[in-house]
Amino acid sequence: MTNKDLADLIFPNITKSIEDYENLYPKRNLEEGAKVVRFAPSPTGFMHIGNMMSAVINYVLAKKSNGVFFLRNEDTDQARTVEGALEFIHHILNHYHLNPDEYEFNGEIKGNYGPYVQSERIEIYHAFIKHLITIGRAYPCFLTPDELNEIREYQTKSKKRIGIYGRYAKYRYLSLEEAAAKIQNGEKYVIRFKSEGDFNKKFIFEDLTKGKIEMPENDIDVPIMKSENKLPTYHFAHIVDDHLMRTTHVVRGEEWMSSIPLHYELFKAFNFKMPKYIHTSLILKKDGDTIRKISKRKDPEALMFYYEEKGYPYLAVIDAVLTIANSNFEEWRTNNIDKPFYEFPFSPKKMSSSGALFDLDKLDNISKNYISRMSAKDLYQEYLTWAKKYDEHTYELINKYKEDTINFLNIERESQKPRKDYENYSSIFNKSWYMYDEEWNRDLVYEFKNIKDKEEIINITSEYLNNYYDDSDSEEIWFNKMKELCTKMGYTSNMKEYKENPDKYKGNIADFSTVIRVVLTTSSMTPNLYDIMQILGKERMLKRLEIFKERY
Ligand code: GLU
Image (cartoon, rainbow, N blue to C red; front, side):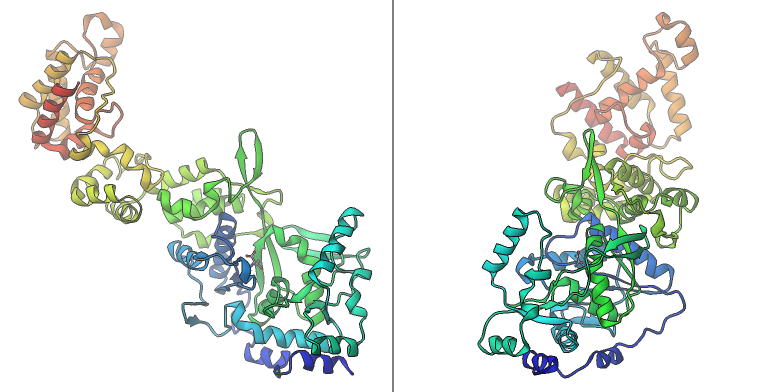
């Protein structure tokens, strides 16, 4: 019996060779330097910020080099598949406009290098496994779950390395005839890679992020095909896929770094050229005085739901991710304020190897700046879209008061130094609720400052609204009238004079206008009062004064 006979016994229907597949998926016809990258998440959990970092970097690398960005569904761990996880990946890529050039979803395939779903590539993997068995680099292993447990327990207790290697890999020594007999007998088996490595020897691996690293050779006979559904493991599948899909750069999380010795040996066993690797930093967060890994269980911001629910503009989130991916991104952004993010010259070398500290305050800052530069109309549209999905009440109000809302959002916007008060769409309402009469009628808590006397407040506001204010006044006239009344009622509009002789006056123009501001809005901190009064209009303001009289 030969290795080939055993391979035929295990895969009787597999007839294509590796060369056949290489011909089916030829070298891509791309310009020099074009990068072929893939985002290859497993649908075993919902997309998190670490996945997002890989997706963004992949997108930038492909876009900047006129390359290809494809999406591969790595669904070989079917027992751990989470319902909705795959749909969520597509949703997020779509939401962030990180659309892959090649993918497969809901029966639609785009691209010539598919299928892009690993469970649909089983025949391809089997051809590659068959090849390894034929050349004596893979074998069936009949260790039972109990035996595997025993080995693991023994290795743990005696502080040995965990895994099937050396004398633990007992089925690598089985004769071909014995192996064939067991298979014909219906015994369960997995296919293991037959490692030729020596753990005591080292090799040099060059990671584009971390540079040259010395690592011990792999000597573990890892399973490459599972027993129950004959699917490959991730380690094996990604070697085959990245080879046939002609990947040039693998961007993946740092947690895969320790698997490099195995992947290195697998590529070598096939004589395939390894793609280049960019291992992205772990994402860290500050927690009190300590810095720790961000946690999907403890930190809501670890999962990608968070940013959409809060209503962060998608471009602000991408900028925040790039800010922690590359230390020079922020500077680049300052100098290239309007450039699309994918023009940033991302450099793997500028990734921190000790981890990337993700900070929500930083995101808020980026986002505030970003929102401040949007036009009021665009912001309104985004706000409306967000509210429709996440906040029905707000949606109804801002839909009803469309013009008012746009006008309010436009206050102090179109200027050299626009206001920066919103970090996301969900924070707008808390800073604008007083513009909506329905909201206004709820629990009113007035934040008066220096002048608190009810009679005086009513006098000032009533006098101004009834006898001075006119909806058609320009801001200048409006302010002059305010100063006029202010002086007439015993206050001063001359701040210098007030500082020198405070006892001569009841207060100054700031105290005076604060009264009107608070009666109309409840808050002493609002955007420009003139604009607010223009939006509300005289009639509504007079009604508010009446309500004030009853409720204060
Ligand atoms: N399916 C792997 C994961 O989700 C992908 C790693 C890779 O990109 O190769 O972690």
